[in-house]
Length: 309
Image (cartoon, rainbow, N blue to C red; front, side):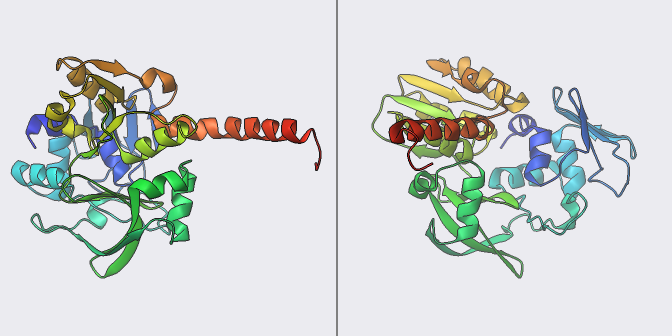
C-alpha cells in the first residue's frame, strides 16, 4: 500500500471499524474522546470532508498516516504494512462503558497477525452468529452460500464471527462486537460467467444486495473490495467486463472510489442513487424491511380473505 492509497481511507470509518464512535457530530466535524490520551470531554475532531484530524488537547493533527503513527508508535513503512495486511484487529468487550481506545488492546508485533483461526465450519450452527446476520437484515439462507463460521483466538482468548473469504485466502470477520480482517487482505471476486459485474465495498453490502433482490436475482458477477484502498487492485479484472455497476458508500471514501472508477475508462453505472438517503446498502435494507413485512402481511390477508385472524 502506498501513502496515497492510505490517505484515501476515511479516518471516520477507520475509527468506527475499531469501535471508536464520535460523541457528537456537527456538520462535517466528528468529535471524539481522544484515542491518544485520556479525557472526559471530547476534543478530538475529525473533518470527514477534508479527511483530517486535530486533537485540541495535545495540539497534534494531520491525516490518517499521522494518526496511525501516533496511535501505534510506529514509522510510516510499518504503518503501511499493517494497513495492507489488515492487522488492526480488536475485540470490543460488551461490558466497557467508555469508547474502546486503540491503545487498550492493540497487538504491537508488526510481522505477526494477532489473530489465529482455530476452526472453520458452515454457517448456521452457531445461533449467535446467525442472530448477528439477521440483525443486519440479511437472509441467513443467502449468507450461508458465501460465509462461514470462523472460530479464532487473540492472545489467550477465544472468539467467533461470520467469515467472508477473499481470493487470497484471508477472511473478513464480523460479529456483534468485532469488525476486522485476517491477512492476507484482498478483494473477493465471484464469477458467474456474466459480462456485467457489481462492485461493492464490503460483504455486508453484498449480502444486503442479494437479500434485496432475492425475488429477482441479479444476473451478474460480483467484486467485493473489502477495502476502498483496493480500487486500483480491482481495475485489471474490471476491464474485462462490459458493464460495471457501482454500489459504493455515500461518504468521502466512496466518492473518491467513484471518481477513480469513472476516470479509468470503464463503462461504469453508478447505482447508489437507489439508496441516496442512506450511507450504504445495508442501511437501506434495514429501512426497507418493515415496509416489506407490511406488504407480506397484506398479501397473506388477501389470500386468506381475512380467515384465521
